[in-house]
Length: 360
Image (cartoon, rainbow, N blue to C red):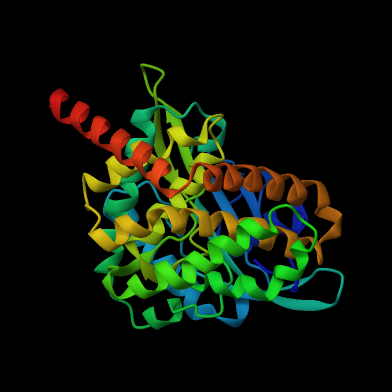
C-alpha cells in the first residue's frame, strides 16, 4: 500500500471513451468510488448495466502476473457461487490490458480491468448482528478452502515476501518503530512484536497453508438487507492483497477489521470464530496464536498508517484518525490480556455454535 508510485486520474470523459472503445459499451454515467491507491469508477451504461472500471496504480503494473492470478481467483469464486466480481473481456478477448494515461507527469502505462458492479453497502455501515458476523466467518473459511485448491501457472506470484501488509511479514514493522518515538503506543507495539517473534513464529510449521484474500476488511465486505430487514453478505471485493499465506491469518484479519465497525469490539471475535470453525476448526497452534495475530494486524495498521503519512501528508486527517482508532482497540486488548480475551472469544463461539445447532 505504498504511495511511492503514480495513481491514475482519468477524467469521467476519458473513462467513458475507454469503456466505449475497449468494451463496446456506451456509458450514461460515471462516478468515482473510494480507493486506496488505484482509481475505481462506477460506470452505468445506457442499457442499465453497472460496472466498475479499475485502473491499477503504476507499481501494480510491474507485476501483471499477480493481477492475472487475482483476476482468475475472482472469476473462479464467482463461478463457485461466491458474491465476487466477474472480470469482463474486452472486444479483443483480454481480461486486462495496459493503457497509456497522462497523470500530470507524461504518459505512463496503467493496467485496466472492467468488473461487474456488486450491490450493497460496506459492512462498516451496517449493524453487525451475531448472525452476520457468523456468516462472515463461515464465508471466509469456505472461500479459502476453494482458493487452496486453485491451480494457476503464475500462482508463485502470490509469494509476497516483501509486502508490508502480509501478516507473515509483521516483523518488517521494526524498520518503522522510530515513527512511534514518544508515542504512548510504542511500548505496546514492541510487546506485540516480541510475542510474534518468540511465541507465534515458532508455531508457523503447524499453521495450515492456503491462498488468502488477505484484506477482508469492514470496507471490502458488502451487505444488503433482505425482506426481513436483516443484512446478508452481498459482495467480497478488492483482491489486491491476495497472497500465499495461512488460514489463521485470514481469520485474524477478519476479526481485527470487524472490530473497527462495532462500538464494543469485544463482541466481534466469538461470532466470526464460530462461523469459521463451522467449516474449518482451528488446530491447537492456530488457536494459541489467534490473539497475537489479531494484535499484530492492529500493529500493522497503526504503524503503516503513520508511515504512509510521511509520503501522503495531504491525507493526514484520514490516516491520523485510522491510526488513533486502531490504537485505542489495540491498547484495550493489551490491557485485557490474552487469557481474558480468549475466554470471551471462545466462550462466545461455543454459545453461538450451540445456538446454531439447536436451530437446525
